[in-house]
Image (cartoon, rainbow, N blue to C red):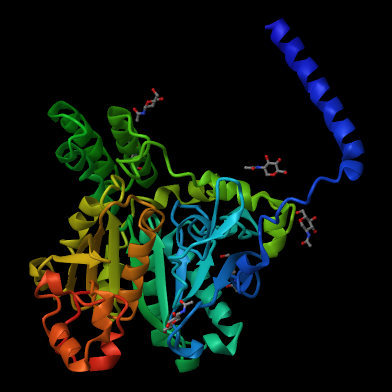
Length: 487
Ligand SMILES: *[C@@H]1O[C@H](CO)[C@@H](O)[C@H](O)[C@H]1NC(C)=O
Ligand SMILES: *[C@@H]1O[C@H](CO)[C@@H](O)[C@H](O)[C@H]1NC(C)=O
Ligand SMILES: *[C@@H]1O[C@H](CO)[C@@H](O)[C@H](O)[C@H]1NC(C)=O
Ligand SMILES: *[C@@H]1O[C@H](CO)[C@@H](O)[C@H](O)[C@H]1NC(C)=O
Ligand SMILES: *[C@@H]1O[C@H](CO)[C@@H](O)[C@H](O)[C@H]1NC(C)=O
Ligand SMILES: *[C@@H]1O[C@H](CO)[C@@H](O)[C@H](O)[C@H]1NC(C)=O
């Protein structure tokens, strides 16, 4: 023990000496300047802070990337707002690791993402709730403890964002997010619907739809699916399944008796037990040999150059997920927002999508609550065909749709779906937002006549071999309501 201390002391002194020597000689050595980790082209169109209200100094950090190549005038180009999960995780994770125009590399530089979600839409990442990522919480007490509080701050931030530039004023707004944002997205969407009823036209938020990826939305229904899911995937045996089911029932019981914080702990035990039983690298994707490397984002955004580029105080210590915010919302985790989805599916459009390999908030967990939706179209939705969806000739997944509700299963993806399937995730979001059919068409087909295209588009969704291209502006060509979108 003692010798270890002595050795490490010696090493420390040696290193310190080396550092001093190196610092002294550095101006002379003047090694070639390392490349800027944050090149100018990678700067967001805008970034900064949006106050949550007039009296508080708490504010929500955002990065905004204008559409790279919109086919519509910018004043009409959809604006997508992205919310990360957690609770307490920063949307910079999606920005720099999933769907933003530049992604962080292992050497902590940025490289362009050819499948960014801002190809044809404006894209805004919000660090929410306050206290998350680069967002500022004036005090612990101001961090919201429930979904209505989170939504209220977000509503104010979005309203403020739209006022930043006249070009934002009338653009259709889509609220999107992942994982625990399966709570925030419906909560904000619902808040907007309610608020819009009370304010006059110019103050309304132009909500056009909401999208939830691998979401936690109706936790009590979702938590009881893990055992069967893992069992049928072949990851646990019957005895383990029964053990896990007992743990699941405990989470349900605690939630039903209103012991919300304990219910969250119980859910964590379910997932912890499943992790231990299976020995998987991560439950976010059962095919992964190593977990997602989201830590790269933390390392990158902790660089002075990165903070400077984003206009953040250089003394800010960045964390991808805030334990403080996680603790404040701990008792909220098991509470459902399903009724808010029911309102949104009636009055807006809803996209749900999951990566096939996600064992936490994946396909099975989503199916479980969706079939319990109280909505007049639910019967038709559940009876609708599950279409085979192809991108560039390969199966990308499956799409089920009825009117305002669409559910997509993305193959070969886990929880961070746009990281795993960038191109397919881009095709998915673009087609859903533009109400185009998902599918494929050979590039040569674009040279076909309008008549030929029209005849194909009529049988779209009826025959999976003939799905129309996601790159094809089909709606504007035909404008026919007979063309029931499968997306
Ligand atoms: C931009 O979009 C047009 C069609 O709208 C396309 O022809 C062009 O290749 C696109 N450019 C880039 C850089 O994606
Ligand atoms: C501003 O937000 C904080 C935190 O939610 C809250 O305590 C305060 O009452 C709000 N002020 C107004 C005027 O709404
Ligand atoms: C659940 O809550 C009740 C009422 O607050 C309390 O009496 C009970 O001890 C709690 N049970 C557990 C397991 O925490
Ligand atoms: C999983 O295993 C670890 C390491 O043995 C242990 O500390 C933890 O308590 C286990 N989790 C559960 C929920 O059993
Ligand atoms: C962030 O940077 C500070 C100062 O350079 C350093 O002390 C800290 O360890 C860094 N944290 C991470 C997660 O990189
Ligand atoms: C940056 O943060 C430090 C520490 O919180 C604070 O003293 C300083 O005033 C801040 N700088 C600016 C420009 O806000």
